[in-house]
Amino acid sequence: MKKLFFLLAILLIGCTKTDVFEGENQILIEPIAKCIDGFAGEYPCNDYDLLTHIPLEKFIGTKGNDCWGWVDPLTKKEYALMGTDAGITFIDITNPKNAVIIGGLKTRTDNSSWRDVKVHNSIAYIVSEADKHGMQLFNLLRLRSINNPPVEFTSDTDYTEFGSAHNIIINEESGFAYAVGAKNEDGSRNFNGGPHFIDLNIPFRPAAAGGFPDSSYSHDAQVVTYKGPDIDYLDKEILIGSNENEVVIVDVTDKENPKKISSITYSDIGYTHQGWFTEDFKYFLLGDELDEQRKGVNTRTIIFDFTDLDNPVFHFNYLGPTAAIDHNGYVKGNLFYQANYTAGVKIIDISNIENKDIKEVGFFDTHPENDNTFFNGAWNVYPYLPSGNIIISDINRGLFIIRKSNS
Image (cartoon, rainbow, N blue to C red; front, side, top):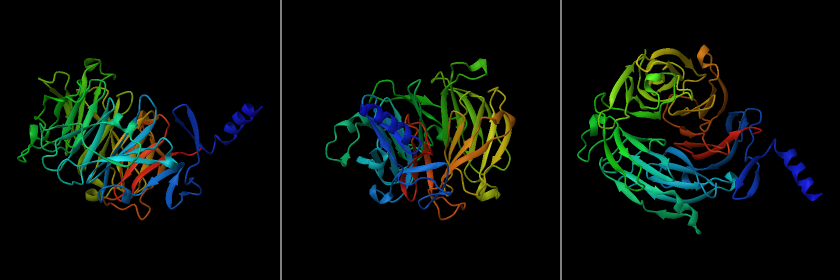
């Protein structure tokens, strides 16, 4: 009878609480602020609740930047990796309301506003625009054994084939990383600022594997093992570079002989910043970081039809409801999660993208002061945790964990 009562209780409260699994135990978590009448506490919202907030003062550094997520393959605990100008902090967010800062890894050299992190096979790869920083490698499995957090970590190894880099991209299927916007230690551009290839297939022994200098500086990229409609490139490793004033498509399957497939520009370019494929590899959603400031448009997402990689075409523009600057965006299923600086994170339904009809279905605004065209607020969003919880890194306010209401 007690067991039956417990199961009924779970059903009754399941619509208002979040189910999180920690080991073999199910934890029922009440959001610290539900989205009610357009607000979760002080934060404007639509259909997304606030599970926790860790203010920037809890982290080393004075400015937030990138974030990513990791799930321990054994314990299934969920972690957030939060970047600042001074390093990376690792937070156990399995039970978001009782999130625990496990420790941090300081910058290898100087502080920098630009620091980015990705994860592959339970190893964090961290780059920065700080001079002579290189790439830090950190074994995330070490987080299991910390009994008295927080602790100050050191990297497990460092990769020094470049001095600094703007970002790091990893194709987890191939086991290759791509550093973009890299410089040598003397300040000159590494591979002309184009992608620098790194073989990660032997853990903690990253190996330089060439690069692609032919399309100039690459600010960001996505690299995929292609499973899309263009049969000419099926199972090839394809890089989509956001290269300041154009989008470039490169076949990087053969690291010794990468080949440019095509490129495309668009009207009213401000700064071609970052983009992401739809899951069917048919469309590419691009964010331009400076068009809102320089061209006076509302938040603009440029959508391309990449059905034929040799002949990409412009599909349409989507304009958001505010003038806030878009930064990083990621696709999960039929939703596009967009870090939108002063407007927080936007959630956009792209299920009808083929018919040029996408629409905002939710948001959580981590910067309630305004939606101006300033570089404040949400830097990045990570929507891929199995729990459905979503990580947001905010430049001014630190780490947020949100979740769709009633899910």
